[in-house]
Amino acid sequence: MLLLTFVIGTIAVKLWLEIFPPIVSLFEVANNIERYEGQKVRLLAEAHSSGGMVILDDFCYEKNSFAFISLPEDYQPSSVAVQDFISQENLNLNTASILITGRIDSKTKYQCHAPKFVIKTEEIELISQVSVESNRVEVEN
Image (cartoon, rainbow, N blue to C red; front, side, top):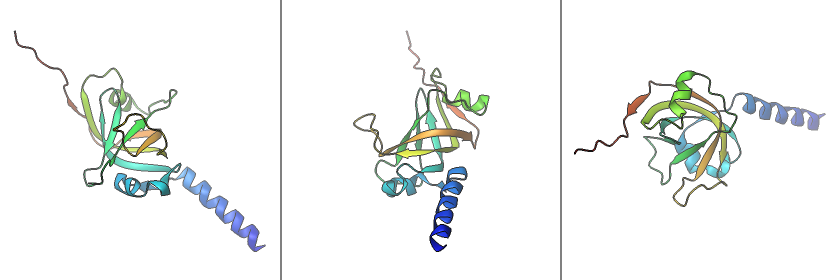
């Protein structure tokens, strides 16, 4: 009976964390990458988007304390604002605070100067207004 209670409790906790993943900081994940590998989490961070997306933590000074955002091909944004923010066609630098839900993947490497991990995204929610900075270079004749 004790073993059955343990098994049911373990399954309940895993199911709870899958439905309601914990909110963790980028600093926490960057410092404990082994603990979070493959785990579903929610991260509150500053995101920068301009044809790709990276998140930063203003309070984290850990080396490589940034992460790439990996969106599945079938990702459907929850709003037009999120769609505009992540658009690959946008040539401006967009910045906003976001709450991102996804799985931590430290095994995938995209570039030699890549961060310690990638977030395989399931959902993005804008927490702040998007600030836009033009990437256009004005050429004087």
